[in-house]
Length: 338
Ligand code: FAD
Ligand code: EPU
Image (cartoon, rainbow, N blue to C red; front, side, top):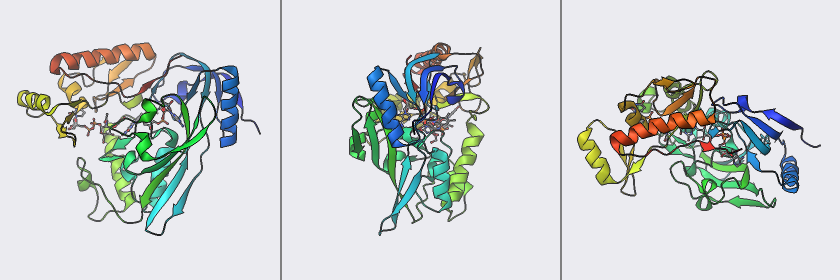
């Protein structure tokens, strides 16, 4: 059966920033075959194609020409291996947080620190989602995908994904060129709590279950991060900047309370939220947009704004940080062009 097609489809509720957007054409294929059919039609028609997930890391323009495809294949399953580890296969349309909680409830370890990250599984490798000391890359074994330009299917291993901090091949050589259809991740029956980030350890019992850790992560996140259902946002608006260790040392001299995290490659990661906060911008609002009052790295949309307004607001935040600290901030959410 062919998937249902929509013309002039409203995506305002399909992006967590709540930016007004209409798509010329929209389809939500429920099987790989339906996805293949949609991609073939897009190729025939020469339509620019955007693959959409939960819309939680995207800045959408008022109008998207061509085709927006939101994969709606949403099965997941487990494959046991003899050594105590388990592979979880998750199709692109599976809601990430629901999968994490389902695995944690089965006491399968590995993804519990990534609870409550919005969005769908298909988007998780794009920026190598990470939180509370864990990144997807540590658990990812394979990404199944289809190339938009010729319908060719492929499976990439972790090396080919070229994962980095909020980075992957899907932001570079393969940006906008593939639809991810399925992930394969490794989880474990052996308890592997990762409680080193912030005050996580203090929020769980001595030998916690995976579910307990996931629930603690959810609780910390709810204290800081705005719920997109209540206040439009895309999570962190900027990446945490990485600078040379010399630059970090000279900043720490001027600002001894500045958080900084040494990386394996000798460089140092700074906390963009702290830099913005320290500029006095936390809670600052100008019209439709603002800096969240509990987490300065999150820009919020109070309603009535558009992509251009958001980018202009963000540029003012970044300029203020650059003038004060000499540190450039790089945007995290992807910008979709019409
Ligand atoms: P979308 O926003 O729909 O898409 C993002 C990008 O992926 C786009 O370029 C899109 O074209 C592409 N894409 C989507 N699906 C596919 C697919 N199937 N195939 C190919 N390309 C695709 N991120 C973190 O890493 N850590 C956090 O702690 C975190 N916290 C957040 C908290 C809040 C409140 C919010 C709103 C966001 C947060 N994010 C965080 C960002 C976001 O949730 C993640 O980046 C998430 O993986 C995006 O998923 P999505 O399905 O919403 O992707
Ligand atoms: N900080 C402030 N003021 C603020 C915000 C933060 O001083 O307003 C300080 C904190 O006190 C802390 C440091 O900055 O010392 C880091 O803050 P936090 O632990 O809240 O994390 P973050 O660096 O701001 C990153 C990710 C989040 C992820 C959390 C938890 C990036 C860009 N962001 O935020 O990911 O959930 O760590 O691991 O790496 C996202 O990518 O959308 C996202 C929400």
